[in-house]
Length: 295
Image (cartoon, helix red, strand yellow):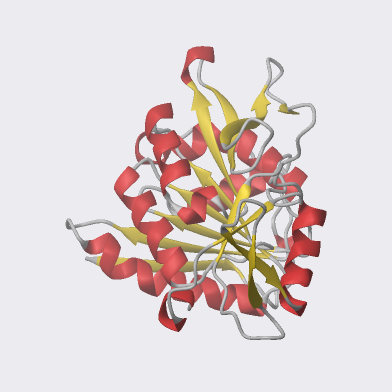
């Protein structure tokens, strides 16, 4: 059991100018344990170049199959410049090592987020257990906020990718994309995102793909790291409320058929209603069952 933490560009003190351009640092194709990273390097570099601001930092988390040296070479070969990059490598030597070490890795990555203007997290793994454990721990350890971008690089098959995108909050509801091959198109890579609110309901969208010229082609009408919450398309959002007048107040009236009808009023309700009108969602007010249930 071991954890290696390799900082190859200081987040605060060293600028990305240290990373030479592709012309200065030619690379050789790697085989074996770094195959995922090398196969994805072209699209990975273009996605980072397109979506990550120069003043942002990059945090890379690997599962022991991607060395700091390999990732540094990929960044150099793609001429991607950020204000700094940090690599955390969790080497899996036993069955539960990932769950023992990931809390420490996530805690350190969160510290980087606090010290940086903005952060993009890149997770490289073909292990669904590792990715699921990362999703759970990043949620538990409060690594992600909406401004934090997460890019998962994996060669898992589409069914497993779909399960991860839909089953874990970090992947489904946060600012997350998956970079994964389209095996039916000669392993060209695509960028996937789970959108919980669309006119057709929740769905997984291919927001970009690798075209025949090996360039990044963004789908019409989409952007990298698409905004998920500007328009809820009238989908219901559950809301638990604690009815304290005059903030939230429940009034019972008789309806046209003589039945008792609950009417919600109050300052906080009116604010929530205004937000729902702007974001285009319907409020599904859950019945009040005590303070413990609300909190």
